[in-house]
Amino acid sequence: MSLDVQILTALRAASDVAVSGAELSQKLRVSRAAIWARVEELRSLGYDIEASPHKGYRLLSTPDVLHADDLISRLGKTKVVGRDIRVFQETTSTNDVIDKLARDGVKEGVVVFADSQTRGRGRLGRKWMSPARRGLWFSILLRPDLRPQEVTRLTVASATALRRAIESQTGLKPEIKWPNDILVYGKKVAGILMELSAELDQIKYVVLGIGVDVNLNPGDFPAELRKIATSLKAELDRPISRPDLAVAILRELDSDYARISAGQFPALADEWAKHGTTIGRDVVIRMGNRQVRGRAESLGEDGELLVRTEHGHLERIVGGDVTLEK
Ligand code: BTN
Image (tube, rainbow, N blue to C red; front, side, top):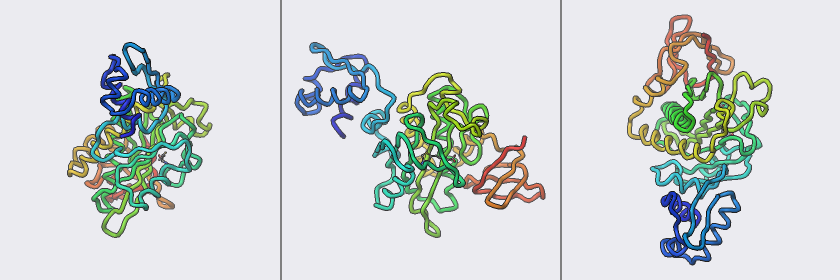
């Protein structure tokens, strides 16, 4: 744990009470001068830390910046997700960074955030707009013990976790459009791009990329997206703290990843269905050149969508673009 993490953790634990330099120095086994130097550095990053010669240090507020040490300090101990967090100012796509780490043999659970992405991508080859410091653009490396055909379980679990975190941080009631678009009042606020490397019967690794439109203004969206996409800030009329939301999402993902690893997928699928917009609706699904029209009946046991087609067959849909008819 870096000294910054230890200082922030100690100040957070003390809450409103000031912690003296002597106490910190003794606890963290470094000189008071070293503590002072780190506090100055944290202040320059926007952390409002009160320093009084008699009482000591008090954390008054934290800035809306993604700082790896701070995220680690707030998240605390997790089982897998977030045991290593890295923050970049700019990347092509955080999925690319994680893919490279995966090929280098890094352990699962590492998370990479970027303040902005120059080549953010969405599902089905679409571009994903990622303006600097307006959203959460991040990816996670997972090495689940699942067969490739079971990977949709992870999609369902991530969407459920993401929805729950957004609800707890904003009070909004987001819905999930299959497979993993998060909608608020019918408009998309977040999406998930899962890329995997697999052998015939075993997944090698999964790159789970998540994009949340947190503090974008309506004018940040290109005109063609304004009808279908929105941000949390635009819906709430107030900005949302990106680090708070990031920590909430990682915590929920860690807990849902543990649930699917422990065979509790059915409970997650029930939660997904409770907040889904898709089941019971007439849908059109486009998969490359193919199109399926019918009614979405239920979620299959691996998280796939079961659609009763207009010809009466039950079709198992594992990917594609869903349009809700009515
Ligand atoms: C979608 O709904 O189409 C999925 C969008 C996923 C966007 C995120 S942002 C972080 C990660 N890096 C990318 O290039 N894409 C994902």
